[in-house]
Image (cartoon, rainbow, N blue to C red; front, side):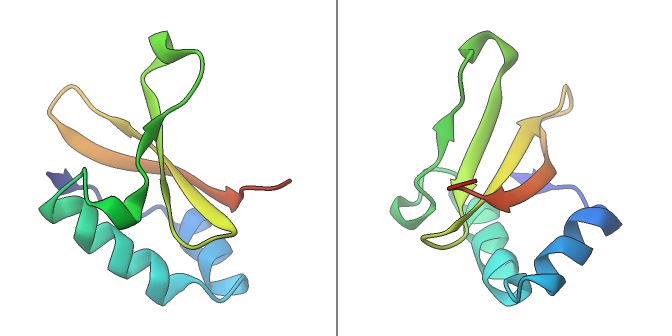
Amino acid sequence: MRVKPIRSDVLTYAKKHGIQNKLTKQIALLSANSRHPSLHTEILEPKSLKIYSFRIDIKYRAIFIITASDEVEIIDVNDHYR
């Protein structure tokens, strides 16, 4: 699965919270196999919106959509527990 380049605001957040390397690693896994066990990929509610997330680490998750051209676009990275 092809992943679109990460938006600058998402990258800035990842850098600020020290998870840029982890995010890069997880994106590589997502590109190779979107069902890789360490990603814990899931569809979010309401499912009709088709918004997904994957785990960056125990605290942070990345939120993404799959575009009409079957590309992954990461729209947010956030603290899973806030």
